[in-house]
Length: 426
Ligand code: C6P
Figure 1 (cartoon, rainbow, N blue to C red):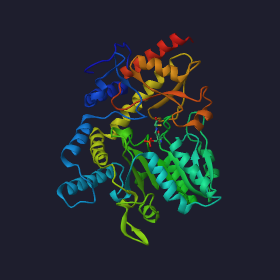
Figure 2: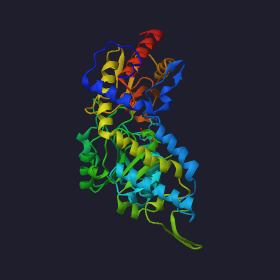
Figure 3: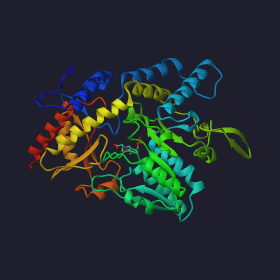
Figure 4: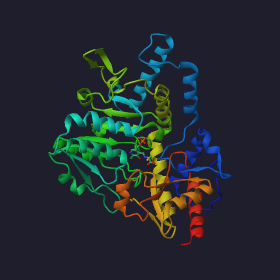
């Protein structure tokens, strides 16, 4: 490694050493990683909440406003044409990143908006009283509340997959939970609390047999592993740019063509229409039908730069890096007396939740912050899961890694947890 953050005499296995080398190749791309917090080098382990942004993204944003700024799909002047071309070229690149046709990719603000769009625009048209929607107890609130709103409005019933001891989805109940009454199965691809990667292809097979659709909440998977919506076979799929090195306020919603075509618009206004008369309107084609109003042009264009940056690193390599670092993190955390790690499903991803006996996770997070270590503490927008896990404070601490994190940083966090333990007593 070109630079070490702490001196640790630990023997690292080859996979972790490769992950460290990989991280050191890219850390320099992220200016924020050079800053200090409370006089200590920043150790940023809150990547599931939002990732840091590389210089190419910062530069692209500056370049857009410096050189290109104009509204899209409206003007005939040069700037507007160039901005429109860049916006649509970015759609193509982002769509290619998940192996979707560009017209099937709607630019949305984030995963939350993608789920709300479908729960509202598809749900109101297709869900009736007594119909069922299947979710799981590990879902983020963004993949629970929009469906609960739809259920309230329509009289539909929501049923939940449980989890097994290791935090994996309990598939034994799949036949009971997905029946001919089920209209939609909506699941996280990767849990933001347990790191569990759910068996989407098996769910899709079961759901389609029963005549139900599948929505994949991919907020935590797209940034961290290769994904191919056509291979998954899902019907809808949503993700957020800010968790994958992009800016906030831009994300993607993929939907199968015939479903998007058949759906009514989510919002009305400029850009989503073909024609408006005093007695009514007709809609634009997909995906514009779902992009009412001036979109987040700058960030949509930068999203294309983001996926090119990640593709150049290689999603397989990012995934391998994080698998090695996740195993290392879990192993090191479990050396700490009185510490419980939640989630041991095989192939789990790098959102690693844990609790120390007799210490509120917020206190732990505050002590770690004093050492320059940023983790998240709280319910992680997954209160039903906190209850299901029986966490003492309805909360956990969570470290979440990305491809720029090293084992040295994990060691710094572990040392800081030991300090917190000494401070608050065992
Ligand atoms: N989870 C976390 O710290 P938005 O806010 O729309 O970009 O993403 C929502 C969302 C949906 N599903 C899953 C599985 C998620 O993890 C998130 C965001 C962040 O865990 C913020 S609460």
